[in-house]
Image (cartoon, rainbow, N blue to C red; front, side):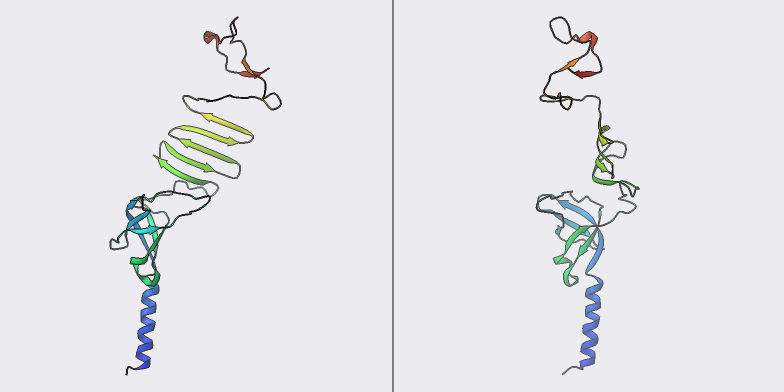
Length: 188
């Protein structure tokens, strides 16, 4: 029969070991979007491990990227049963903003021409490759080389059911005089 004190010392040491490896920081080595699993670098390479995300109604999805910092949650300290959650930012994976006053919901593209949704308490901005849609202060700003409105466009509050005309741009037949296009549209 073993010594009860030695047995307790062994159990305490084993619990300390398990606790010390239950949460492991690491980085993503590769990601499989079909299975939503990643190979991790935890100081050693893991097998494909399930990644955590907000699922169900209102789900968010952002595929993990190689080099992304993560936290592996390992029940009983065993990485074979791990679940992965996104970690923080680091030198090789910088935060897309240094402002505490804005949220960024999507970040793709490049630093020069990002594709992202930025929101503050008063503004929402969708940027895509140098183009922009901004909603702020009771107005919507569209900025692009070309803006296409597909479908019927109604202008004005109470007059929204009336047709729009371009001042000074209609010829005698009622067609647009393309040589004399105005920059303003009025509701009649």
